[in-house]
Image 1 (tube, rainbow, N blue to C red):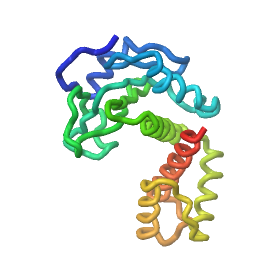
Image 2: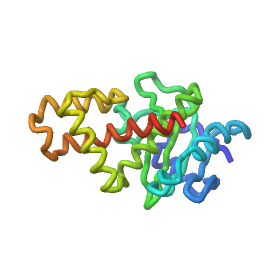
Image 3: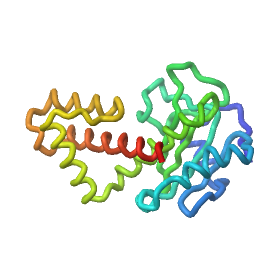
Length: 209
């Protein structure tokens, strides 16, 4: 049932409080909504994007709880990804520089993804959803797939090919090129770039399926 609260619980407090009220969608996915959902909303926000995930991707994911809320307010105005467990769930629209589309929390062996849905186009929500799924995949990335992808990236770097599909991997690549002259060297800079490039590429693929 929808949550009824006027306070601003943190994402961690919200996820912990309503964890037991998650409604199963599949064996791996369940959801809770802080606002009433029509049948069509459940289909658009949950059933359709989850059904579009390839079985090979689902096999790499932990159990995932999805929480749909009106707004998410960033902790201390930090960018997305920083201190996400301390982001807040809000029923009132935060200042623009404190709004976030998603926040993530790991509880035991389950991951809770909290999505802001008010004032968000469904297509934009789908992109954010698949981007979070892609980021989770990089945390459980099979070594063989990693090696194939990193070989491709190193070849692109040697050939000065620009294959990035999102600004995040582009900026990490520029940082890598500025700070590391030997592109064959295994380093945190390269691993961060490779992980983001893979997540961006997978996001584009999933969003297009």
